[in-house]
Image (cartoon, rainbow, N blue to C red):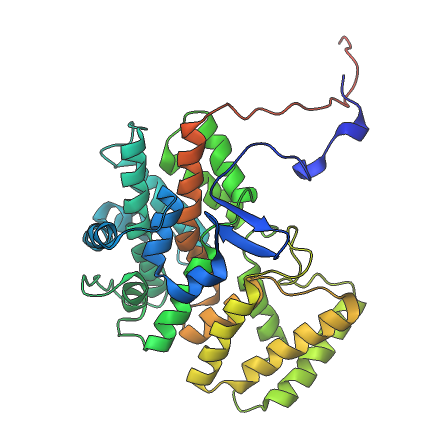
Length: 379
């Protein structure tokens, strides 16, 4: 029925549906959220505004933003049932397991779990957006032997996320760099985890199940985790706070040359969609530069520059968003294994937008396969 030359492994190049949520504009190599270049949103809008844009299709009015801000701040506290479930998990499990479990518990206990109306879905999306930072913050703290830090309603999303994680007010420069990262990670069309969420939604399953499945897809190293891998690379090279930028760059360049000669896969470079470099990188790199200046960590810039230069010279491959994001989160004080859960916190906005879009014009996603096993036979 189907010949092998018709098969698109990994669905490469296959257009499976329409979406009005985001696209990469090939003319400008720019990622657009509902038509707006993401770098412009990162420069001028709060993460709360971007979330509403993704969910509703338009930037909010002042009244709409005020209403959502109040609702988000009222739903930030770590649910006691979620905390109890997290406490049952081992300290050495990956934080992505914690995130996946937390979302499942939130879904099982949600009063509108069985309601898939547009109004109920938007409410669940908003509440998940508000609740998930407490999961990430508590998981990092419990691994360090620290207690929960309660949220504060006088802080915006990014300020409060950092407050719950570290128990102190973050500097404005740090808050802004974190906000930028959340905006840039929020959405990216039909990537593996988003498509997973849409497949689950297409069966008429619930929103929390779809997000749980998306987290499972993001846990895989071929999709998520590259920001963690970047820091593992930095650690392997060696981070010396007393080293000059120039010396760090030399060591990093030599490490990359050896890694490429050994045909080692180095994460944080290249992207399946972008052919002329990830359009989000300049904005995130500028945020990283501000963090390096804020913390006085020139050696981190040296490591960054050395690896980037060696990869460009050898392969002509440019960094993707994860490359500057990893060191940025490290400088803020996040443990490396928490980087991909931070990705979840941002991408909840994109995933839930796609879940609502899929449900609004649904068709069960059920591709065909080409059988290449034995012909019919008898025992």
